[in-house]
Amino acid sequence: MKHFLFLMLVAAFSLPLVAQEQSTAPYAYRQLDDPAQEEQAQDLMESLRCLQCQGQSIADSDAPIAGSMRSLVRERVAKGEEPEAIREWLVERYGDYVSYAPRLTSLTWPLFAVPLLFAALAFLLLRRRFGRGGGQ
Image (cartoon, rainbow, N blue to C red):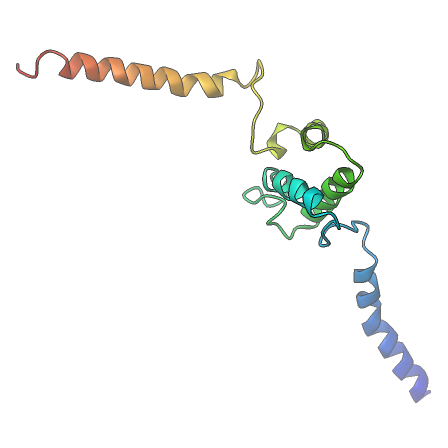
């Protein structure tokens, strides 16, 4: 009976170790064998936002979804896909928020135009204020 309890305790404590080795994301923490492909994957991962952390790239995040995304990126790069095609696929799957490089679309153009309009307005106001010759 004591041996049975001992074996049950050993099994209970070793089960999490076995579960950690069997990952559904094989390339979450393992680099690609080809250094050029790994560099491509790393560059892409640094430009993709972790959906759970929101402030970190998937390259820096330890969140489970970031690990899955890293593995997807590495697997697709290893198959020969271009990084920009992988980015498009991830944006299509998760939305524009996943990319640190937003696209210019009919919905996002005001985000790019409004700061330029404010800068032009500030320039005109400052020119009008200080462009009179400096005296009052």
